Amino acid sequence: MTADGVRTFLRGLGQTLITLGVVVLLFCAYEVYFTNVYTNNQQHQARDEIQSQWAQPAPTPSGRPGTKPSATTPASAPPAMGKGFALIWMPRIGMVNGKAKVVFEGVDHEDLKRGPGHYPGTALPGEVGNMVISGHRTTYGAPFNRIDELRDGDAIVLETRDTWFTYRMVRQQIVKPTTVEVTYPVPGNRDATPTKKLLTLTTCNPKYSAKQRLVVTAELQSALPKSAGNPPALSGQGA
Amino acid sequence: MYGWLWRTFPGGILGKLLCSLLLAAAAVVVLFLFVFPRVEAQLPFQDVTVNGPGASAPPSPAAG
Image (cartoon, rainbow over all chains, first blue to last red; front, side, top):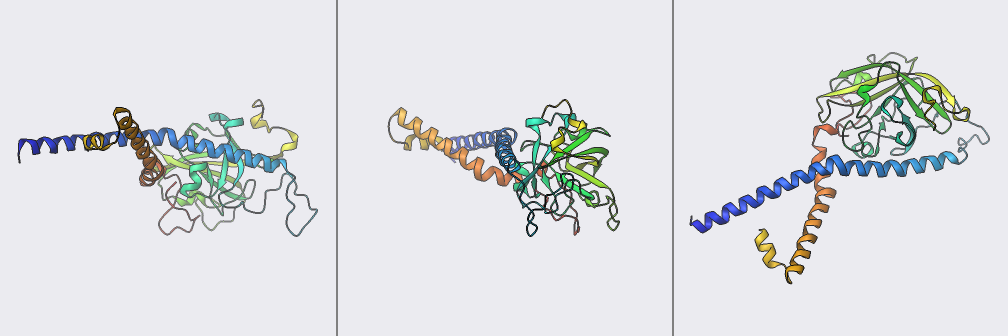
């Protein structure tokens, strides 16, 4: 190989390596910045949509015209896949008012990019059983970034069309990614009949890793009609 | 490669600069919209759900 050949080769190699370095930096920018921008946009849209829906009179259940759903009964029909159907508030970690997140139905990659996702088939707000919601710990708005800071008794509030569902944390654990037992209607016991009204949040742990899952379990404390104002857990938040 | 691109772009300094910027912008768009979303799906910190092999619990892909 001539000296010129070596020079051309080295120059090409250098440029390639520099290009790769720039691409990696761009990827970091994409993850820590662009994904959040995307999620914030999606959340804004979904929030506008859900609030304009809630401002309309409730759709009457099909086949039973005139029946008025009671404010404190759980919604019976599951939300459509990919639809936002509730807002999640966590006062301890500052997720209140404009920072409350829209919860979507579904836990596909695409659903979770938009915000916390509800496992289809698990309980709905206020229902007996176990309502399971997953969310990103990092990137894509990182809704569950700080749920490790929740303490026993801390409020996790779900806002639906008519009702504030206040759950209180009862347990926080770190489990293996395969520990599906935490999502059972009675966590840990697949065949048991549920009697409690539970809410389970899952996210990854530690941050930027998939080694484990951080699981927060909470139990329903109260279901109050929104017409009666903020629930005690959110008093002073000025919703 | 960059040298060759620079020599290939038409016009004077301004034309070449404009072409460079356009090409760089196009590369960023392709990376952000098509390449990075696929790469990130392979990365571990997207996994926030629990699921096990053959589990009957809520069906869900690991990605998320």
